[in-house]
Amino acid sequence: MFDGADPASLSDEALESRVLGHAAQITALTAEFLSLVAELDERESWRGPGIHSLAHWLSWKAGVSQRTAQEQVRVAKALTELPLIRQAFGAGRLSYSKVRALTRVATSLREKELVNLALSCTASQLERAVRAMGQIDRDRGIESGDRPPVESTGRWKWNADGSLLVSLRLSPLDGARVLAGAVRAEYERTRTCDDADLPAVSNVPRNASSELETVEGEPDSEVKPANRRDLWRNVPSNLAPAMVAMADMVHEGIAMPDLAPGAEILIHTDEGGEQAHLDDGPALSEAELEEAHCGAAVRKALSSRVSGAPGKLALLGLGRRSRTPNKALVRALFLRDRCCQTPGCERTRHLHAHHVVFWSAGGETELDNLILLCGSCHRALHRGEFSITGHGAQRFSFHRPGGSVIDVGPATRAPGLWQPDSKIAADATVPVGGGKLDLGYATEVIYAVWEWKERNASRESAAA
Image 1 (cartoon, rainbow, N blue to C red):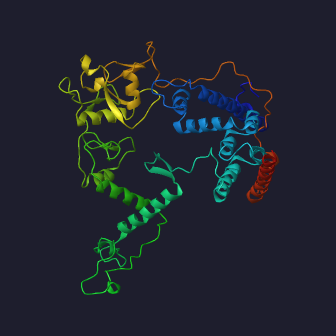
Image 2: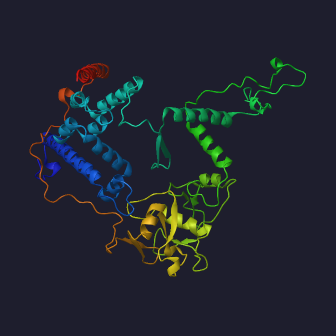
Image 3: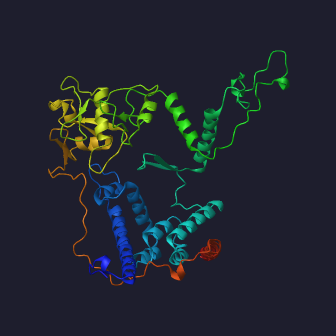
């Protein structure tokens, strides 16, 4: 199975067998990998300049995204308290996808039944079951000390076709706020001056008790402000226009400082206005560029690129005339670096413009001598935990106290002496019984077993 044969030379049966065999070996190796991650987390030997967490270290050293690394660390730590799941994982019987799902609801009391369930269904079916269990636990008021409350999260990315994909997972209250805001934004976006349900009540003056002011000589009961019905529309089925309207309201209603990275719509163009594209985003058509220019304030951020050095900015610096970079220089520095430049850090908040050759040592306020560092890394540098060397043309290297270079992106490579584990069955990851799942029946039986266990545990503790 691991003889390195050309896949094209294999029969269908042999190819399928090898795919499953490799999947089982990958599962077993992933289990061992996460056990090592858990030990590394316990020792905290990953700490170093610019490294703020074990997930940061994994992202830098192992070449995985920070979101993936955070989930790997979470699963690794959870498995230390779940021996049955860990054993099935190490035997290649539970894939990482299944283990990741199980660790969201598993406890020492529950894991035996959860392992049996996971072995009998597919990963997608198990995800459905785990989501259902989470909802059941919330409905029953069951709270686990190891399970944090639902937090609002969101991600975004530019698609290949130039569209922006936004994915939000909101806590119940945050979700209600967003929907309420969408209703108001949709109303504002679509209403007209003669709208019959114009919410004009807010324009009627109120007294100190927040009650509607009465017209002099008339009783309260006869006050009839215009359009008192105030009939708001429902939540729109398509949230996109309302969300854009909400963004426009915030963009137009909040005054911004002269330098506001990320809060401005920044468009890069050449001298002829061609090859226009959003900052760190997709290209724009001529019509989109004209739309953006309508009513927009234009500020030139930089003059040209450094010849022969892609990504480097050429901008007149301040030399020794000023220690503090001006707004144009800070803008250019942000466009070049975007985040803390310490290898493995990549923080984007609370950044400092650091003089590589200190100002007190004759360093100049030029892009060749400036670099962005977060507050933590800036402090670590001045404590001597690492150093930075400038090489001209806006190129820099980071060094440990002994002088060795800190790699920006360490290379990853496979171990040279690895041998497959012969104890791992080639079909270990294949679900038992064909992967069928009756979700309602399965959760009913499992929760009945768990309630029976809890009653027995309560009786034993009471007898003791």
